Image 1 (tube, rainbow, N blue to C red):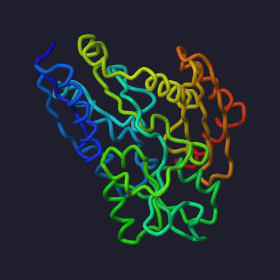
Image 2: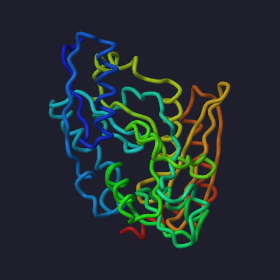
Image 3: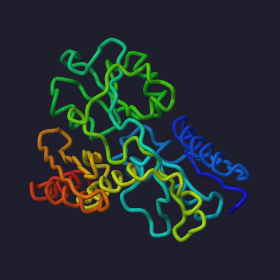
Image 4: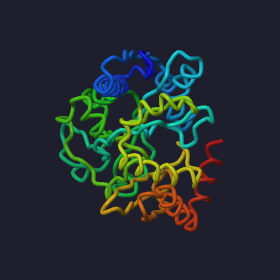
Length: 310
């Protein structure tokens, strides 16, 4: 076993919390192991004036961390799974996925209790095309606007009166001790979560079996199976950050059930699918949901969105 590990992480408050959480778990498992953090600012953290869909997608939060691992400056990287591209470079692999925090979206407002009580024209901020499309489909009278930045930046803009409400991932608020800011939690039936939402993943260089074995006790099997199904669905439909896509899997009584959707940016064309199957073959469940979406026309919709983005 190595005597030192270096974790590459973004330097946002939430990313550092996640890296510190992994560090603490490793220190408990291996008291003689020295674990250090390598904080980094990624392109995704720097380019805050444009939607992610226009500047390269969520992979912008991962690339610099992979470079650090490739150059030997870090042994592993800790990510929010919803930020991890569906296809990793061949030289990297996911070694563990930790237990999932609350996967739901959170409604945050200083003056309104729920989305439904917002008046016509109320301004709602969110960084997610997935949330925007579902909001526009359910509540077309609201003014939906893109809101990027870290959690505290988004809350500050709300507090400054720039928005009537904002939507955030509940997991991030809870991990940062900001649960009191949540006015309402949105059920998956109201706002289907993003692929991997609420889960933390650990990425390493492919082929490093010793490190993979060391990290194996951190892997939470049920979360990993669900996230694998969600990611398989997104890969099969060739989803990207340019399109609103949701995917959320759960396990009940040994059966894995996945719900998924693809929509246009306006929330008008909406395709929904669900699939279920044995929990020991999550990719098959994800691919079954993808086939259903494609049969409905999701592939043509995604192609239309890609053409418009060029």
